Image: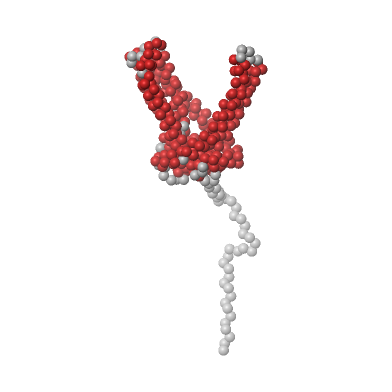
Length: 344
């Protein structure tokens, strides 16, 4: 498995077809990162209440509760609006994953890459892709919840009953949580790889969700070493990109903080929102690159992308092999003339 070739091929497709970045943004990474970035801008509310007072919102607790009661309908409408946006983004994210897989495969096949075709394929296989993730991650969630209950509930019951928890019980809970943590890591690794393979079998091989999961498990079982190396490569790129994002967040947060101190809360929020939009560009590109790597890897794993053997190296100084015995490069003598017929 040529891992360097996979990375180069994936980056070439990512950089050449920037329309794929839109799919990469909605496929998951960009949306999840936005949730983490939004928490930092809220800290300005604790230092400057001028803009809130200008809007008629008092900083005292009683008046604030009165304001909530007076605007309860507006708050409910905004909450429902935000909920609808979250659901819509979730639906689009599943379709974007399928569309991104399809379009990267089209680019690898040197066929036209069109956004409309990507969305059409993504929504065509939306139900199967949802079912793949539901069948894979629901058991993992059940294992996590059951493990936490087994580890924590006995200690909580002992504490609530009034008896002091023993040191052995606390150590047992800590040990159980540690084992649960490693079990989740292993299960998450297996489920994640099966998910990557199964989604590509569904979109590119037109399989059902169950067939895709079975084929993904077969890929992982028969090519575990190659899959592990690919996962480690992906992990390394992800770690490096995470550090890059942290550095970018710090750099982009400085102007937002400066404007927030100088011009008020809403000025800082506006600049922070612009910085957030700038941050979405590398997030979308990396999400596209990650998906492209798995698609190219899957194509080579399943034999859809064959690697041409390199041409043999010609060395003019190499000795010319000797001709076989009895071989002569001189022209052969002409055959003897046929005998003349006898005279009558």
